[in-house]
Amino acid sequence: MGNRTYRPRFTEWDLDNLEKVTTLSKQQYLRLYHQYQNNQAWGGQNMDEKTFFQKCNEMLPGEQTKRESDRAFYTFDYNKSGKLSFEEFVSAIVVLNKGSTSFDRIAYVIDQFNPNKNDNVVEESYGTLVFDRLNQYYEINDVDPVSSWSELANTCASNPNHISRDEFLTYIAGHPIYITHIRYHK
Image (cartoon, rainbow, N blue to C red; front, side, top):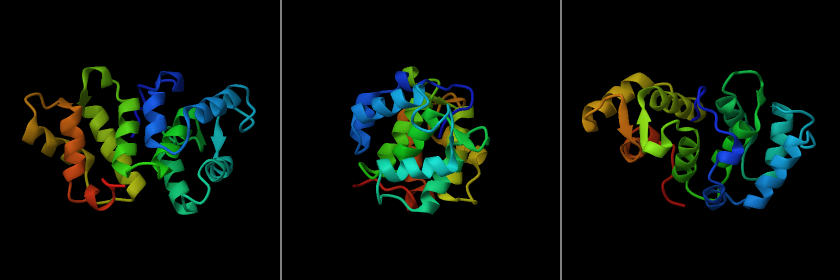
């Protein structure tokens, strides 16, 4: 649900909307970011799995299982280093948080990492990456990201390399496999 090439810094994120889709305040995120910048939060610039689980329990007590936390950690560890950057950590916290529907939380993360969010479009490379990350997080093995993009592009786009953000999210919301995993109502 994030892109390896476009990695906006946390300070570029829509913090007002972040507060709306989670149970945490903008001040809590900014305080944690300050700790992170000063190496106070987890003893370095990247978080290992053990520290991630501890921070999840501090920030979201009782909201997630160890299995859910593990899935989030490995889904957002984009470079497979075994450590999360602050942005990867916050992405995982957003997805694990129960403050809004899972669809709203996923849409928020998609928007933060979309290299074309200002143009309100999703390019093929980012779209297939999002499908891949959804598959990884929800442990879906029978949805091919490239085939999903092709199906979407054939049904709604004049340019198969660029799909509007709304068409992209509508496709996810109506997909017969994803709909079984993603909640659209609180």
